[in-house]
Amino acid sequence: MDIIAEARKLRSYIEEMSVNLDDESALDNIDVFPKWRAGVSYEMGDRVRYNEVLYKVLQAHISQEDWTPDIAVSLYVNIADPQEEFPEWKQPVGSHDAYPLGSKVSHNEKHWISTIDANVYEPGVYGWDEVPLPNEEPTEPEVPEEPTELPLFVAGQVYNTGDRVMFEDKIYRSLIDNNVWSPADYPQGWTDELE
Image (cartoon, rainbow, N blue to C red; front, side):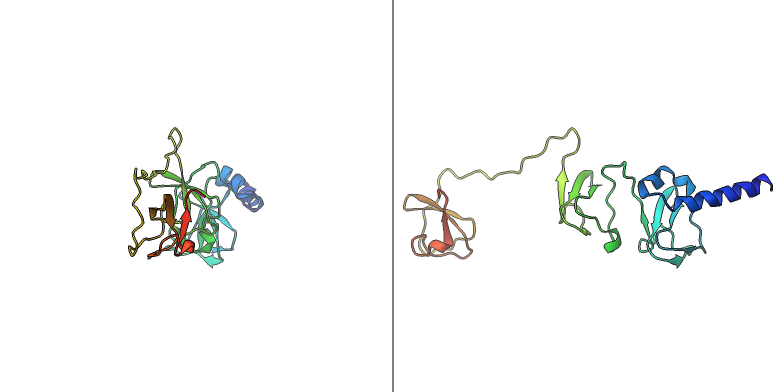
């Protein structure tokens, strides 16, 4: 057998053995996985290289020129580098690539951690907490300054949730919107801030 035939046989054996690697080990040995090609019948779970990025096949199909792994996100998922603590966020297209609870990503030059499971939202919109960047002091949420004097309760004036007033020498906060009753007339609509 010539050297080319031996190399092909060895390559085939290596590719067969690579199916047993977990994703982290697969990323350390990306060169053992075949390059993606059009016209190949891929099975769910197969892993292929495309532009030196490792992808996992999400559903069985025959590959096509216009269904490359970086574009056909319903067919392939990028196996992110677990060594990268905050990989760049990518918009999920379905449940197969939604971010699980606790996922870490970077987006718009900030770090984020998912606070919900199956997260498909953009960081900063919903379902993410910002994580301070290294060497960055955590920012304290701005607390509005307390007014030095609270307004006195005025009968008939409309108060909304959170509005604070002085009534009979005590501070009260409205618990409801469109509150027109005094704390004495409708105690369920107010809370005594000193209790």
